[in-house]
Image (cartoon, rainbow, N blue to C red; front, side):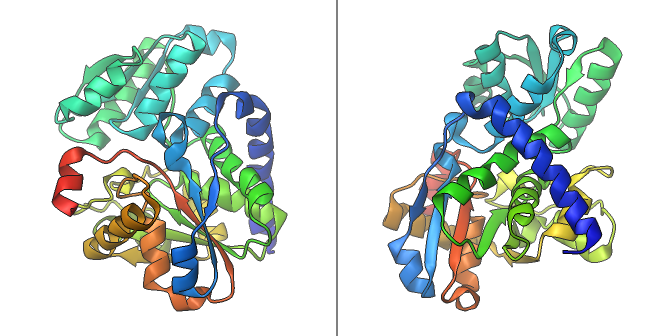
Length: 325
């Protein structure tokens, strides 16, 4: 492994091992289920890492809990703030309730009432601002700075990445001889954590990022050698859609440690979602099935290998399910 790769992997490894100590008692070790159907399809061994079964329904709990538990008492007492209408917001809200903390979530004004209701269940304060996620996040950061609150980022943070990396620790216990791991990518926190930890264990494990063609900002940015400000088209993979921060620490990690990307059409994502529903009876969201769709699309390259597909979350709306089925 080149020196820069090794250095980045070791940094993530240290954060991940610290996270493991902090959060293990608060999270669920999700199963890595062997998929007979996908294994037969690709003439290999396929394991589904079911983060859709994590508490709050996604991997985001790992990073949010790790970040919050890494704060000093003074930082916690200031009050916390974040921005997210999805899985990060749910994880943040759960952690507030679990640890008896005060906090607020900034949501775009267009956020669906059902999402707001689910966040209110945990008792977080809701602030509506702007007509998209980027404006809401910018407002949350600015408000936190002005009011002296502690901001909890959704992905651009070492402790967030370390928390997500605990998935890699579990995989080394659950799946013998991993050859490659396929990971959904949005802001890059999930794949940065998994890649950093697993590459520090075995540099030959291939880490493959999966994105929808309609919102492949990380892939296009890596191809260009710099973070691009690109508009995203509508996608069923809404959990991975959108831009990435210009200073995100996930970008250099993805540049060095992610071996390849596979981009998916909307039809390919929907087809894979139906397969998981029909063959495994698992409820997962559009972003979570990117890894499955990517495996199916390029199944020949995985023959004879031990392959892990990360199912990142479960939150799919009833209306979206109706349209798909």
